[in-house]
Length: 107
Figure 1 (cartoon, rainbow, N blue to C red):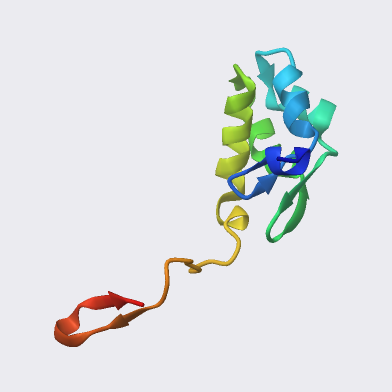
Figure 2: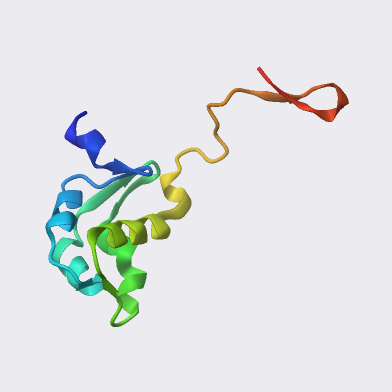
């Protein structure tokens, strides 16, 4: 598995930011993290956004601290929401059609 594949989580490509967050000293506020890593771009299926843009709402809540890197990643997942999903409504589970009796059938 390549480094690129290793740093993609739930539709978000963290790149080298993932390791930097893991190595960061916690607890840390959103403001501290954005000051340090705000220019890092995160790749989403809908396009790139900076770490600073994504965590901006957390900066406005003064005093909130993250205790570990996983909490920071979860905050990112919460803020990007459906942007990380890719094509909405897409399923690779096959086509469904309404069969006799109103039941759905998979092909």
